[in-house]
Amino acid sequence: MSKRVLLRLVWVMGIGLVVISVGCDRGAEKRGEPIQKREGVQEFAEIAKVKVTRGGTIYLNGKTVSIEELRQEFAGLKQAGGAVWYYRENPEGEPPPQAMAVIEAIVETKLPVKLVEKDFE
Image (tube, rainbow, N blue to C red; front, side):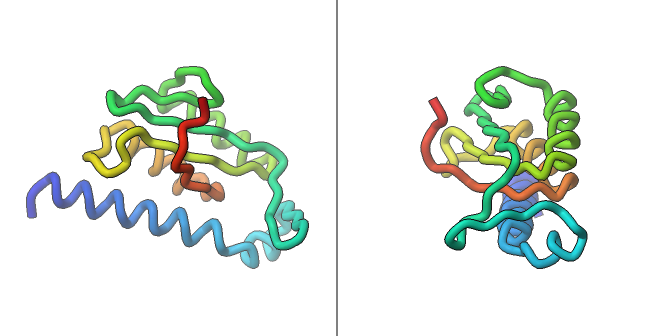
């Protein structure tokens, strides 16, 4: 299997796991994590808006960050009962390695994520 096919498979599986985790409120309730609902919509204490450009630059709430800084922010976000809104430029194209690292960080911290189709700007 080529490296490109393998990376795409990992990408699809990572997104699938993240999307599945968003819909699994029940496990969070059992763990005592804060979940507030209003008319069927889940609300979070904080939202981290993450954008990855075609060139691999990572933005967190409009500011460039390294993957290490992002991981630190995600750890605090998890403690605060937050979630991630994720946008990637050119989602149909091959993802840059940084995009894969962001998805891995989201999955590792088990943060709820919303995939956003429009740029935050």
